[in-house]
Amino acid sequence: MKAAVITFPGSNCDRDLAGGFEAAGIEVSRVWHKDTELPAGTDIVGIPGGFSFGDYLRCGAIAARSPISSAVLEHAQKGGYVLGICNGFQVLTEFGLLPGVLMRNAGLKFVCRRTALSVSTADSAFTQGWKPGDTVSIPVAHHDGNYTADAETLARLEGEDRVAFRYVDNPNGSMGDIAGILSANRRVLGMMPHPERAIDRAQGGDDGLALFRALAGALAPA
Amino acid sequence: MKARVHVMLKEGVLDPQGEAIRHALGTLGFSGVEGVRQGKVIELDLAATDRAAAEAEVKAMCEKLLANTVIEQYSVELA
Image 1 (cartoon, rainbow over the protein chains, first blue to last red):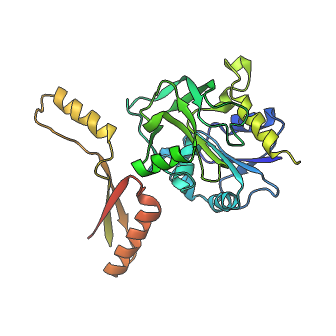
Image 2 (image 1 turned 180 degrees about the vertical axis):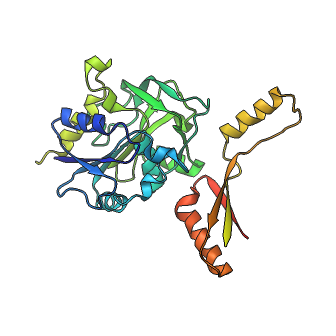
C-alpha cells in the first residue's frame, strides 16, 4: 500500500506524518503542492499539519486551491483514502470534502497539549483497531480547532455515525466535542489531534500508532 | 477599477474574536458596547472596465476563495 504526503509552504508535520505511515509499514512518497499528479498507485493521501501559506485568508484556504488540489479531489471522488491532520483537516473542509469549518478556539489561545480522545466509531479503516468508547491519548497543537457546523450537518454526522473522535475534555469549544469526522463513504478522515506525534513511547505515548496500523491492515492487498 | 469586498461571519455564527474585543472595550471603560463582530476587507485592483462583468467576476472570486460561505457572507463595492 502506498501513501502520498503533501507538503505546502508552511507545512511542518509532513515528515512526522510520513513517519507515522512508515511506522506501520506503509510506503510513502512525498508530493510538493505544485505537483499536479499523485504518484501512480497512491492508496491514501496524507495532508499534514502546519501553517500552510501562513494561515493567510483562512486556515487551509490557499492550500485547498493549490495545483495539487484537483488531483487530491479526484482521488477522493474515486473513493481513495485521505487523512488530514490539524491544518490538513482545515484544508479538507476548505476542499469541501468534509462539512463544517474549524473556527478560532473558543478560549482564543493556541492549545498545545496531550488530550484524551474517546473513539466514537470503529467503523472506518482509520479507527477499526479500537472499540467505540476506547480512550486514547493524542496531542493537539492548534489555534483554530473549534469545529463548527449548522444543526442539520451535526445531526447528519451523528446520525450517520461519522464522528470518529471526541475530546473527553473539550480544549477548543468544538460543537459536540468533535475532534475528528469521516466523509459519507468513511474514507476521508479529518482530525485536529496529531496521531503522528504519538507513534513512539519516547514521544510520551504511542496511542497514535493504532491508527496507522489499522490503515495498513485495511489497505493491504488481499 | 477597484473593488472592495467585505467578508463577515453570518448572523448566528459565534465570533470569539469579536467577543474578546467587546470585553477589552469594556475593560477600557467603553460601556454600552452590546456586541462586536469582526470581519475582513479585501481591496482588489481590477483591469476590467465593464462594471457588470467586474461585479460578476468578483462575486465568483468570493464564492471560490475569498469567503467560506459555510460561515461567512460577503458584499462587493465597486469604485
